[in-house]
Length: 470
Ligand SMILES: Cc1cc2nc3c(=O)[nH]c(=O)nc-3n(C[C@H](O)[C@H](O)[C@H](O)COP(=O)(O)OP(=O)(O)OC[C@H]3O[C@@H](n4cnc5c(N)ncnc54)[C@H](O)[C@@H]3O)c2cc1C
Image (tube, rainbow, N blue to C red; front, side):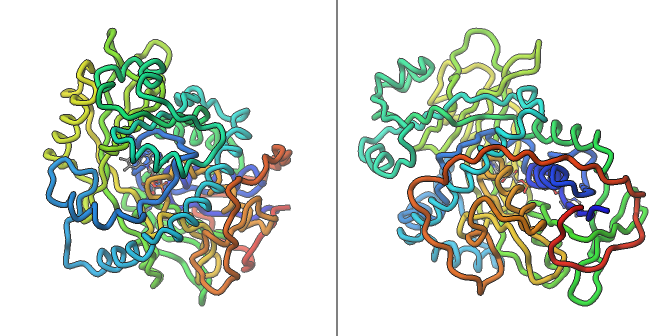
């Protein structure tokens, strides 16, 4: 009999976690409060699998820049101070992580996780029709307007595959940058980085999991509380169509994005999470207007441009994502910020058609002060956290899911789990080398199928902190 795991949240983190657990032979139930999965922060994000651009926001120089930016309409970062303990605790913690040494260490740790993510996604590709979600390796071109910034960035580049380009070489590679050529200092090209439409990726994962006999995905099902016995979480209580329900499991994974803060609060856990609002624009690419094929990051304006492949017969889409607004509680659209973003886009790509009609969207990045996700147990037995992926949830999803699954099963993890733990007291993680771990051969996990269990299962298995499916 295999163990059953409940996953709370059907965003990219919950779905990849469910997928990894299913591959290990677990019975999986995934609950999401929305009608469809992938409608939270994962919905219309930048679409970048930017494995080589993982540096956390907490960096030397950011606090002083943030102060200057505070009063600019089009600033990439906007802080609205509030009388809010959560905000100030988070900001104070964030400042602590801006030290150069800490920033460097966290960047390397995130790079290791990103490298694992890439490996895992490539291992999964034979099971998932990723190209139908617009997955492609279009490379990433980060363009700079100032030579100093370019040289500084190049001095910290992570991989030998990256290349430094002059302004002329940028335009040769990407003729769509012609209009800004005179202002360009140059760029860093990362050939292997990829893009995917995150919502469509969520749909691909959902369809796959739906078709598995030992998997259950329940939408329109809001988790309203936890079922506990002593210090152990036994499952969750829910509301579906105003009907209360209870779901029991051996292990429960919290992967509810920004809502994880409130849900964990019900158990007396105060997670170091804060919502950093960001915006995106999506427009169909029609006619001959010049749009980059490579993913472009305009480093000065902190705007990313990704071309997402359209479904057969549909035009490709251009996804533009930007801005960090700190202090907004709701993910509502701020018309002033959207206008400011559109103005910057038109300035950078004057030939781009349809910017005014672009579909605007806002989402909350579930961010930790360090910029690193939390992947592991917490002080409630039976409850696991896969949260806090901030601006990198898509990039880190498959690696985080794998780490989560390895910890639940007690299997030897493929990378060090210590940098991602919430619980203190473990040995300090070593500083990783500048090289990510060598590529590992894809696993040949046998896909055992466990019997389907009924909705609102009413029994639970004996408590155990780690479970290996049989
Ligand atoms: C503008 C913008 C651009 C971005 N660009 C990129 C990018 O290019 N690359 C990248 O790697 N990352 C990017 N990100 C970050 C990325 O989108 C997030 O890190 C990621 O989507 C977080 O995924 P998640 O599954 O944790 O959260 P979500 O996608 O928010 O999923 C959480 C899920 O939990 C469900 N849920 C919540 N509460 C409950 C409850 N009580 N009961 C049941 N279900 C519940 C929600 O319905 C939701 O589906 C961007 C973010 C923004 C805002």
